[in-house]
Image 1 (cartoon, rainbow, N blue to C red):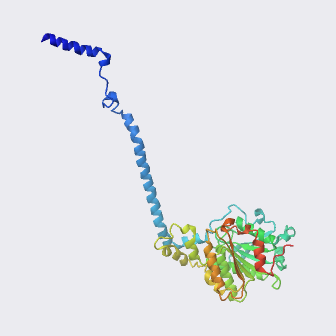
Image 2 (cartoon, rainbow, N blue to C red):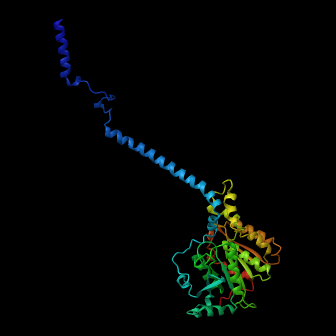
Image 3 (cartoon, one colour):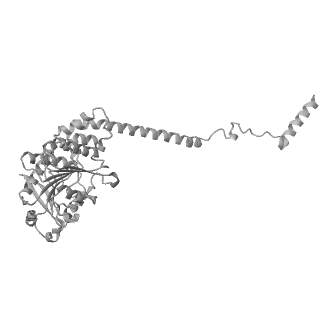
Length: 387
């Protein structure tokens, strides 16, 4: 028995001494040598990405909740404070371009333009620009307001231009149009409604129409009634002012020689519903009650679709198919209403579309090389003097 124990001991010792017979650690072992247990630093580094993902998800949830709260709150805020909606319609507080001196139209490249200030009502003034035909630019240098007034007695046609919302009479696309019309032989008279630009007062549809009527009457007293045509040109929101004005002129029996509407709409409710800013709320239940009724509560209508039934003078509508601010279909709808109007029966009513491929959008129709021909063809005997 003793011998046998010694032999087992010998076998055990020989196994320990043979390097090939030593036990190797199992790769699947979970002991420290196999790396199954992680150091504390390793556990923290592995947990950081997971915790950061959770933190990011939490932040996104909070942002979404805030956006949802704002989205839901805005309709109620506008309903409770309808004056906010009026500001969004007029946008008179958006004065673009910034930092221009409206007293100096020369800074905008208008070296044959004079700046005036008129008083439609006692106690406040409005800013006015008068650009003479380009043929008079040399003679206009250094002249005062009296000289500019005297030029209205010439045979050159006069356009009273009514601009849209936002900006001022010095807006770039407006200035470019003045230059085009001036080059065609027109006087161009434009102004900032009360509450716009450097004009006093606060905006309203009634006030804008009253300012336009004041300017028309002021011009009518100065032009040669027998040989100087007087046209009214409105753009965007200014088309609503223009149809308001012309309706009043026709009601009193003194219509203008023609009305030109650039990018017009039917009425302010349909325009507001079609405007890109309303896209996020357009299909919200109660959209009309929240937003459109708030506009009406401010006595803002600009109902050109109703006005055309009281207008009795030639009417030209210009609209670009790619206009996203005042959609093309609103201008086309207004044309169809005007063409069926009894008051416009016997007067020329024309609609000129501009294809999307031209990219004139809402305010670049002045770039059209066809514009001179369109105007001369429409105005007929009142062809611009370009010599």
